[in-house]
Image 1 (tube, rainbow, N blue to C red):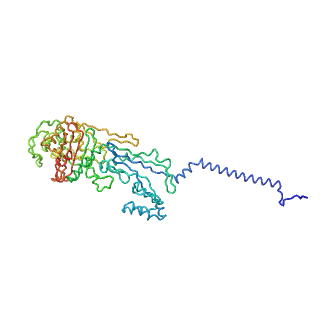
Image 2: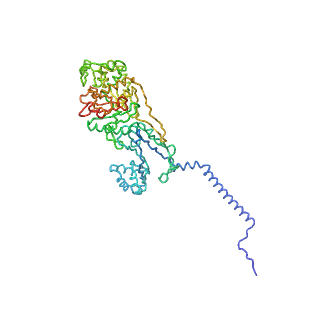
Image 3: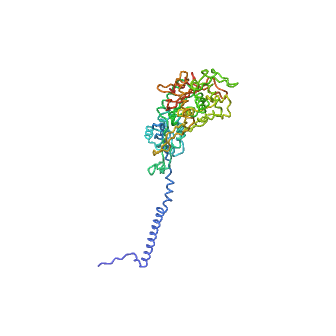
Amino acid sequence: MNQRRTSILPQPMASDRRAVNRRMSIVGGLLVAGLLGIAARAHQIAVVDHPTYAERGNRQQLRSFKLAASRGDVVDRNGMTLATSDRVHRIVLNPRQIRGLGQSDDLLGLLLQLFPEEDADYLTAELARDKAYRQLRMILDDEQAAIVQSWKIPGVSLEPATQRVYPRGLLGAHIVGRVNGQGEGNLGIELSLDERLRGRDAQSPAYFARGKKLLIDGGPGPDVARGDTVTLTIDSAIQAMVEDELNAIVDRWNPVGASVVVLDPRNGEVLALASRPTFDPNHKIDKVSQTSSLAVQAAYEPGSTMKAITVAAALDEGVIRENETLYCEKGRWQYTPKHVIRDTHPAEWLDITNILAESSNICTTKIADRLGKAKLHRWVRRFHFGERPAIQLPGATKGLLAAHEKWSDIQAANISFGQGMSASPLQVAAAFGALANNGEYIHPAIVKRVTDFRGATVFEHSPEREKVVRASTARTVLRMLESVVHSRHGTGNNAAVPGYRVAGKTSTAQKANGGKGYTDDQYFASFVGALPAADPRVVILVSVDNPEGGHFGNEVAAPSFA
């Protein structure tokens, strides 16, 4: 007979079940409320307060990273590159990590296999720094970078960089200039147009995680602008010939310095300009004197080349006639009780053409006396002596030209034949260019064009013209100056160029002796000329400072013109 099993546990009463259900409901409600609170908070963080929390996170990992613009190129008038920037590499160290791994000594040994022993102190100091990021100053090419990568040392990495290079070396060094260790222009066009060449840097966001940098958004944005390209007026082929000729002058005459200027008188564009001593912008400069452009920054007493200006002024003023003759005192003239003026080639009577051809100081002084001090000063100023050339090169000198009220009689005489004043070779060439350009002075220029990184022209040279003497007067003087080179008694025979008629003027100027007159054994020898004389396309000036073994312009400078 089956017996009903009964539980030994007491059966719950109905009231107990209701209590349990209430507690379950309360707990469930609390759980739901908690979940709803969490969801609400998550919504607050993820949606409402997202910008605030994102900014906090960015401050911890997202930083601003400088994107340096690539420096623009410098090219000649034909597009030949004279200065550019190469992509190179720099070593980046995490000295803390390297020391922590005990790798400092091993790494130093490897670095000194790449770099000279003289860098040992610098490298040791960098490895000892309590820093997580140090970029070394050394530049690495691709081959050296591959060697560093092969080391696989934690805390050692590479970053891209740029290095300024000058593919033509010393060609046009004083024009192009160079940059300093920080990549800033400090000489030549690199300095004067630094703002255009260096471009516009930008800031780009980057995540930094565990000491590593990761650019976002694809790298450089539209704010990064490559530097402008500067096109010079110079022609590298002509510049190379000028550089070679200056080297020959240095070898032959061992001067203190020398310079050559070549310009187009029709538009003022400088086709070549060079000086000695010089430098190679790719290498360390040994002496500061190497960086001085004598053609632009140094002033000298131009000497007899100024006689052409004095004659042009007198002809234009009508105080002399083209066919007039003057008595030249047989080479010695007691001009004042204390001052004697002498000629190297004594003569009695000379017409204006032969006064220039034989370079008579005495007759040039007589011409200047007819002009008077005020007019002579005004005419010298009209050819822009005593005024800084508006050329895009730093440090251009204005020379020295005192006010005529301060001139004594002998000072006025000296200035008429180019002593007692000073000018740069560039100033003399530009003034002579006015005679070669039908009396129109054009300010010399070295920059032909500037284009931005999109290829748009932002600057174009436009000749600045100024009429300084009548065209008929300029042509007359130029015709007279042919006799300097092509007549039997001319002082510039060595400047003759086969197949061309040359109009030019020699100068043999004594150097000033520290305000105490002039030296007897130190000279500036120069020649300036234009060809072809009938319609000049080029003006060339050659100036040699204190040559050894000779001093006449026809002997030292004129052969280099030819």
